[in-house]
Amino acid sequence: MAQNRCDSATYLAGQLAKGFARALQVRAAKLGFSAGQLPILIELWNEEGLTQKQLLDRVDIEQATMANTLSRMERDGLIERRPHPSDRRAQLVFLTDKARGLKDEALAAADAADQALFSGFRRFEKELMLEYIRWAIDNARKV
Image 1 (cartoon, rainbow, N blue to C red):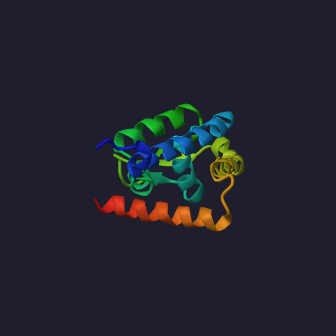
Image 2 (image 1 turned 120 degrees about the vertical axis):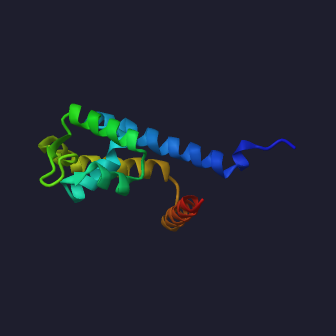
Image 3 (image 1 turned 90 degrees about the vertical axis):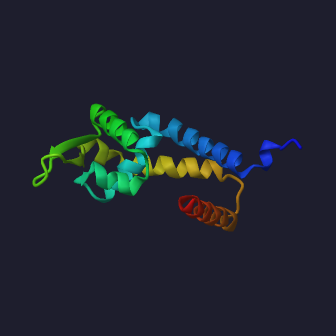
């Protein structure tokens, strides 16, 4: 029996993730950061001086991805790393003035990307979909 890919939650979730990433990437590129950097920026806007390990625990990406992303962010002048005062192996990650200045525009860009993909949804439909997505993510973490 042939399966229609549009009946597959896995396929649809992947397409949805790509759509949100594209919608954000277009807006983020104009501001000088990438969509993949936004979760890290958000964590650092909330609390600077985190270690790479603390960021890993909060953002839920692979170690190698985090290391590469932080290197690109440092290269692009978004973060700076400073020695940890009590752990010579660790570094603390801080935002630059450039990244601090991006906060309002970056969050507005993320909101605009969300709005674009939720166009035509009524408020309760969007809230319900977000609840279902959170629920599915929680289930995925248990697998």
